[in-house]
Image (tube, rainbow, N blue to C red; front, side, top):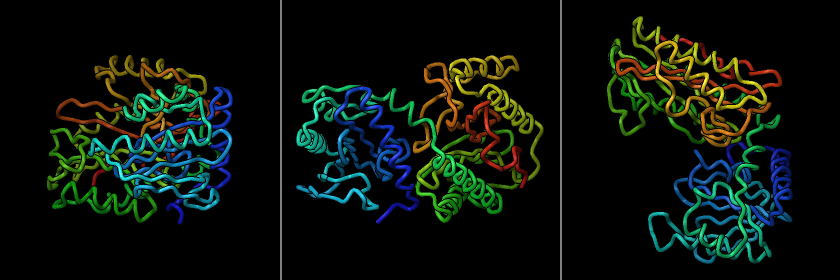
Length: 389
């Protein structure tokens, strides 16, 4: 068995090498991370090339001196020796299983017990944790009571955020996949289809091209009402002639890499207000791109964005308008006031300024790489415009 689009053994070895370098600098015997899904569970996929899915916990124990152990959904008593060279278990020599569920309170500690037993079996004492504040309470209690623990997130995020040559090649392939999805949405969308049918079509195209997971946000509206990013439970409206819809395609591609693209489509002629709002966000995106370079401080870029917006009578950003991506939809660095990680060459950034005026939701989204001297050309080839269908 192997994943839909496995990364190469060389790329996995590179990731393991930089991980062990971080561990050596911090004096760690092992590193522990857990995920329950693959949208924001990128640590697990980055280390094993296998994602967590469907809310089931998947815990990875990365040892400084040997193959990994994994704790995941399985039958009681599962303790399977595996081949670290097998495509399904690369780098993993032991898989422990237990039928635990986050919704069944008395099973939640089952995973924790297996994790601590696996650590003890290898004589681990000093344990690094990734995003410990997001780990389950029971797992954190077991680890802090039984071992010396170290928050390793900052050091690990810094090396994970810089993409390798192979990852950059996968990034470009994912951008092309998303461009193709958007193009096929343009061919499909028409009066009489529902928003859900548009998202269904986009998902089917992405899956056909090799995507495993992601989201398709957007809700159509008559011109003069905002077309906002809403998810499937709200995508019930039937589109009519003259309507418009903003659509966000945020799906992964080869190697599980996430990017995102957003544009607005109109079933007819776009009104001047919508065209003007799009030009505002396009100019805001250009303003941010001119500031991206190695060593730049994200907090400074975010502040200048807010100043630029307010100088034009537009609202400042109160959520997040640019951020890193990779094995996760959102990863560091954030372009925001609270980010401390400086930009570095070969980071991947999504840049999506937007604002909501009540009658217009203005948005644009594309991906870029940080280069030695600034920012790459746009990774998406889809034209930056309002699409009139």
